[in-house]
Length: 393
Ligand SMILES: *[C@@H]1O[C@H](CO)[C@@H](O)[C@H](O)[C@H]1NC(C)=O
Ligand SMILES: *[C@@H]1O[C@H](CO)[C@@H](O)[C@H](O)[C@H]1NC(C)=O
Ligand SMILES: *[C@@H]1O[C@H](CO)[C@@H](O)[C@H](O)[C@H]1NC(C)=O
Ligand SMILES: *[C@@H]1O[C@H](CO)[C@@H](O)[C@H](O)[C@H]1NC(C)=O
Image (cartoon, rainbow, N blue to C red):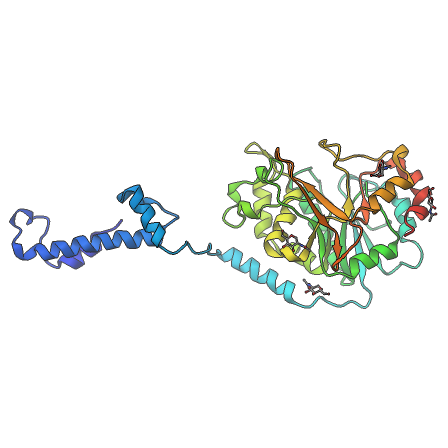
């Protein structure tokens, strides 16, 4: 603490350090004033720097310090830094602007795949007949371009780059797909799909479900366990606090405004790029499972459904979800998946707390899932055979 200034101001020209032995009774009130000022300075400092700094507390006993913090008002909420203020104002502006109305609203189906989409023939059946002009297809083939079996996939590849599981390159590929799909102003909703995804309903049903609502389907929940908050790094502070950290499946479906704010974000993105990757400081943080859930939880928590419209079965509790083979495909299996109308999340700690929320669509409980994964390529023929049957409502 710098006490030099007040000393000089308080003592004027009086030579205090040299004259200690010759103190006259007249100077005593000055000493008292100085002492009182010093105590006041300590108290003011304790007020200004609590609770961030405990330096002032060391001067007092620990009990004294506690007493001071007790009668002081609670610490104010954290002050945003320049980057946060800028990010928040841009995002708020985009979200509060009325959505751009398109005369010909389309859904962008964005496939994130290593190479060929094995279910092209099934998707072809899904897209066909009367739906032209209501959708567009984008393919990010990160390993090799494929020979297409469906005209809807021909020449729909975007420029791609390598994708490494768990790393930010996965998020980069998602952003690349969004950036390409946003170029078409008619695209109003953006669905991310993998090569192992299949549709569960007819095109009209899915179109109606996604277009006639104003929320995005981003999976998001708080997991206090090792596969949730255990992956959080304090390097993400101050912008991302542990209480804001969320988890969710990668396969999102977002409205146009949300696609734009994902493009606009570099602040939160850079925190995940730098501090969320497999093996960093002993944590296995998977960027694509945390970036968007955390981002939306911070900037627009009420704008997301908190579940993904793509079903996956983690009930086997392995490192990868259940993979449906040809012999697993049945009318009953698909009916079981489409009849689910409650989303379930389980925490990864020992308590294994099960969180259940009804899937509310504009306030009405409806089936949660429009797509499902993971299907083995060899299940294609069985799915093609059953498609007309299982997609009938
Ligand atoms: C979504 O629409 C509902 C009614 O249709 C409205 O009450 C709500 O405010 C809208 N939400 C957003 C985020 O626009
Ligand atoms: C999603 O969860 C957040 C809190 O985590 C909540 O504020 C929001 O309302 C939820 N979304 C919906 C559509 O219920
Ligand atoms: C469908 O669900 C029922 C009831 O939960 C279950 O008994 C049955 O095994 C399921 N069938 C398939 C094929 O998953
Ligand atoms: C679909 O197949 C199931 C079982 O084979 C049958 O019970 C059902 O009637 C069929 N539904 C339609 C719409 O064809």
